[in-house]
Image (cartoon, rainbow, N blue to C red):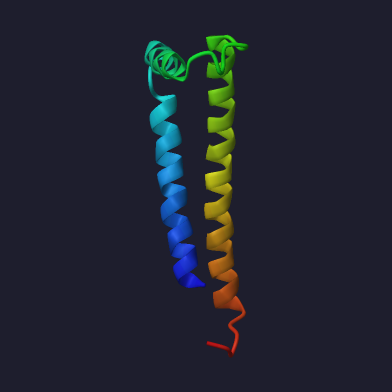
Length: 90
């Protein structure tokens, strides 16, 4: 169980760093990256504007940031509860 928690901590930290790194990019760079991605995909995503996709990306990033922080809090609270109420099974 602890190994699983350590892996989750590692993945949560990667997620938080990724969200912070992408949110610190200038708006022009984000527009450029999304435009290049749309050009490679063709007409698959032509029904929405670039601004809507930027808003969607920011919303998803904020959700993932909250999820990563919530996962870290959950893991550390779980560690505290395991110390406070140890079980006999090992």
